[in-house]
Length: 170
Image (cartoon, helix red, strand yellow):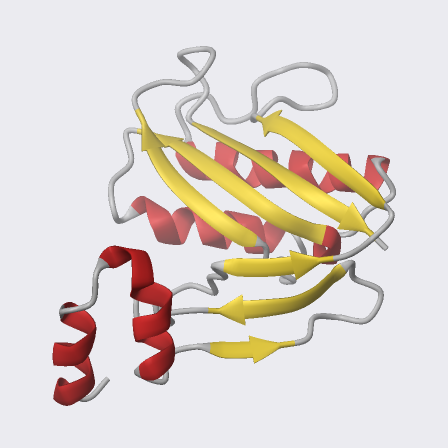
């Protein structure tokens, strides 16, 4: 971003941040994979989080809406995966999210919104989360609109990360 654009954007109220980013040339729009219910993805304000693939807006059409409750690091036998190991829990959480999508007849490309809740968040944890998610989705990180939250606690003290989401199936 040029210094002129930076100065102009810094004077814009927060409610029009997307418009400021658009005028500064930091907004792109593209179609997502064929078969996905999400018809367009806008990767706004790419200057905000350049290290990760991040989407702020997803528009979707389809015939079936799927809500996925918070997934935690519990395996198919009901056991906690990776007690005290944030990376192991993160990967299991995303594997569970993928399994939930598949159980509903959805694919990762159908995911339109995802919220990631991380206990005791520190900035260095972001890369761990996205690396674990990429592994769980076989390198095909979905691009839903996303929110990443640091939280004090989750439902049980041994849970370190929880992810929920919404999907729309075409």
